[in-house]
Length: 214
Ligand code: DX5
Ligand code: ZN
Image 1 (spheres, protein in one colour):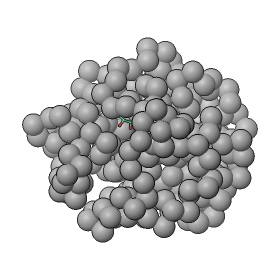
Image 2 (spheres, helix red, strand yellow):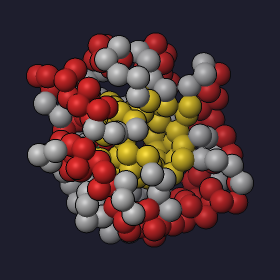
Image 3 (cartoon, protein in one colour):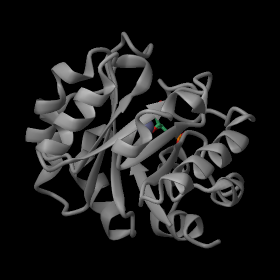
């Protein structure tokens, strides 16, 4: 199981140390939540912050763009050192073009769906992506509870991925903790994003280990 630690819940005043701490604690990926105050009702940080931590860990940078017009900004996040860039289906009317562009730069590309967006919209794009990110909360804020229909949605995406016969990550994001992770894995998740649960824990390693114990 891949654990992607979302630094949105970390202490920004010591971001370098926080990133190094989750690296040391065994996180596989570092999840970077980019919010623009337009696509979602919150603003976080941009490519320059991503770049500033790039040299302090070798872990995979899993960049989640919760922004309008993502195609306009993908170069910035590629240049900042992202290994995976995920854009929202709802934010890009030329999804295939942007996904292909990201991959042409040697970066893995993912597509994300908000809770109210049906799985069926993946039909024509799933064969082209490296990752599907199912938002299990409405994006914008950390520490929310999972939207209950998310579990069956993850199972539907799992079936769709199976039919492609490709190795596509199925990532879940929002409300992932010691009480929810097992059901998400049972439904088919292969990568767990977790922010609040890890960063609120007294010991990051214990929290990450727990998410890897199934
Ligand atoms: C939510 C973000 C998430 C968030 C997850 O909009 O995309 O990545 O940080 O946070 P937790 O794990 O706290 O629900
Ligand atoms: Zn995220």
